[in-house]
Image (cartoon, rainbow, N blue to C red):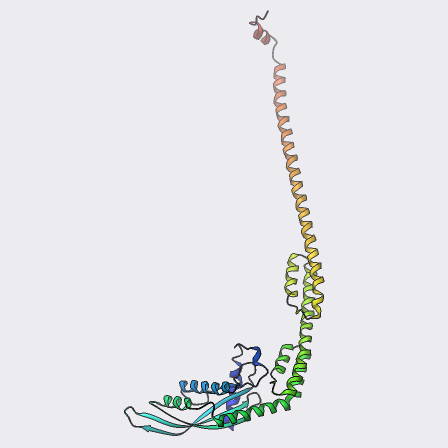
Length: 334
């Protein structure tokens, strides 16, 4: 029993390290066994991989293949060599008789639900190949294995029957702490074969889901309002809209989102119109300034020309009259 508990105590942390694996919707609502072989099992690496494959075959054959959606229940194994013989060659071979002990248990509470010992023998040119040969010969459809799995399944169903109230209470506590996702995760792990607890869990998930989307929706709406109040412009509107788009359409706050959108839209449009008006006003003023400048320059040019002429007139006034007589004396027009 000490070895069994050691196997299960090691299993849980390693199963949780796979949490980044893909989880599908249909991973919930059924009894699932996560297959695992502890490092405490003294096997060559290739033989250990073969044992892990065999455990997956057993679980899959009975529709109980596990996923990280619910890492609680484990199908694991240990191997003991009962006899080992050297067969003379060539080539020399090793023959081993194994006792493969299968376990189904609760990795979280460190409890074993069922176990069964399967005998297997294998031959190979080395110890690793002898292990692999023996493990390959284990038939997943063995009647003994089927009985072992049925016992484990029955114990798991009994677990949920006795723990249903505790599961409900844990989910309620998480709900009060607004840890809605975790609360629904706890409830979703109840398999549908546990009819009463399963139905109760579904009803509680419905309540938590509505609370989740309404709480999150209200927070998103308030955050969008705060951003708009701080920056009532196109930039603020863009940031607020990103938040509004995250509100679940079934949330109560989704009814308020259109009004805020309209307010932002009207303001942004009005701002744009005002911007365009000011731009037109600016451009018009620039044209007037340019016209005034052109007019001023023309006036200055005219003044400069007049000044030149005044100088010339003044010069002409001061010239002696005799010059004109000399200029005209050669004209004979009459």
